[in-house]
Image (cartoon, helix red, strand yellow):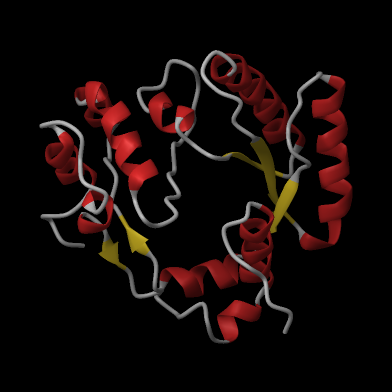
Length: 203
């Protein structure tokens, strides 16, 4: 990773006011797998240190001429990065397909929807990561849990738990080859298509 690119440099670039449309791309680094990444901060204190800049960083992401996927970590209404959530076109809340993780997700979604309702109507899409063989049943179970709690969210999506494919992706293997036919990549493409980010062409 280049030391002179990343989120800290992006924050410095927008400090003076409204950024140009290309500032997010300028601070991104192209990974071996073909994804451009803006490296984030490593400590929560770093995020809080420039909390006043998050609304401007969010504007830069909205104005970027590419799709921007931001990992906001364990998000709640008190998080410094809430401006990024408030400027999102979709908010994905991710959980493992376990009872404990699902209960945490229910609480988190309820809190987030209450906070976001004061700003904008942002679609919330729950995503479960778990065994592909159980995906349909797990999605239906979570949909029922959230419906019983009165939460108007999108139908639950799922991404297969596929650690071998993930390891290959992390090692820089191109997702356009054999890796693209794995459960992980097929699931990720289907999720992106459901959000309108990519067009799925039948094989």
